[in-house]
Image 1 (cartoon, rainbow, N blue to C red):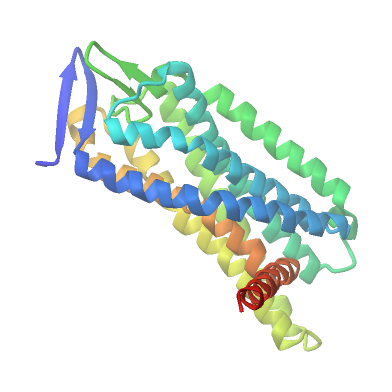
Image 2 (cartoon, one colour):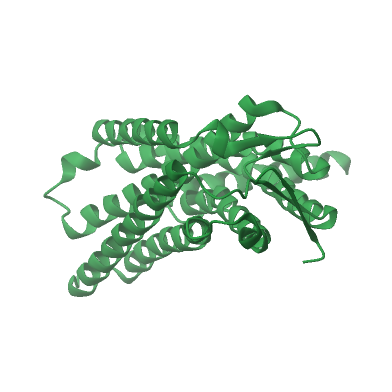
Length: 316
């Protein structure tokens, strides 16, 4: 553990990662920010095209892009934290940034589940639940998701669990004290409601669609590949981006001594870094897999190609 020091002060444990590791994460998050902001901004436009076509799926995609964009902009605060190794923005900003982090986690997961269920209803029950796939019901579901996630975070995120300071330095989020009873219950609830339930929903939707597509001879091969590709990205996004961080949350509930938790710092930070990749996976989902997204990307590429050709002719 030569790259990790642990300072104990009156039962308060502050694990401090090495400068080289912090720089590594800082450059990683910088790459995320530089890539995710323009891609999610463009995805807002793409999803708006879905909404204009009266497609309820566009509502979920729009909310997904909005959630990712908000989180990515707030991620810039963590760059300063990683550069200096201490939090200098105060407790209120710290709690707000943690709030944005968890809000992005669970709005994204809930919306990915909505996309999977929407595709399940479209393929397995194409004529039975059409009213649920319209814009207005989808908008109501989107609002309900935001309200529920905001309320859940308001009841589980506290100052004491998010921000600590002593005479030397302040730490935000990376607090490896034994968890309070409130945070233990919150982590268990997050693991069940924020990971197990979404996985079951996406797996069920994927399995149901696979069975329906195989039994329906009228479905074209191209259409089958398109549907399965979409759901595969959703499933991998939930597993790869949100699985590790929820496993870490559950492990934290089993450890009562800060010295036992110290070894968990680096894997814990890796799991958070993986979760931030969600901001890049979502634009991939609706820009390069959905038909409207592909069409709009092709239009943008064609625009720049024409502009480049025009500039080359002007130079000649």
